Image (cartoon, rainbow, N blue to C red; front, top):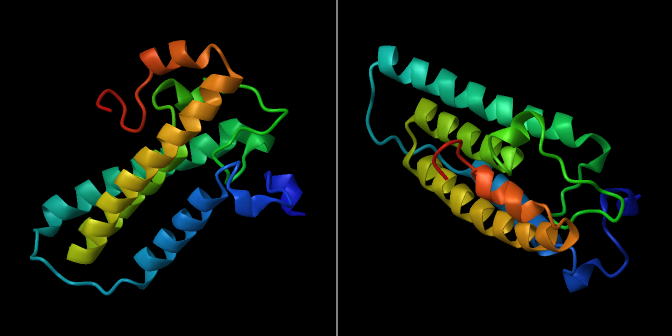
Length: 162
């Protein structure tokens, strides 16, 4: 069954990025279990629109990324043997929309709860996904020669910014 998702019997060698998946799972569980440590308040008239925008952007990129990958979706950062390069849909705006979606959603939650620890963890998500995406891009460039051109025209995680 794990083979369907790209895992192989030698998963422990981390040849396809299995440790990145483990780290991501641990970070996700930590985020969920973190206590809310309030750092202040914002008027609801400011906080609510920001949370809605961040959450909507997160859902847009996350769901869009999953949708456009289709049956190529795998938790592993290494492309599957039968994969093809996806540059349509949300992949026109960011190279790693699922990672961007998680970051935006974590920021939305941290802001909604005004939680110091969740805000810090959202930043850690950003650093983690930046590093994971960097490794993934090494493999994508090796598999798809046209990936370098795609990299030059599309930002990594945040449209128009980075």
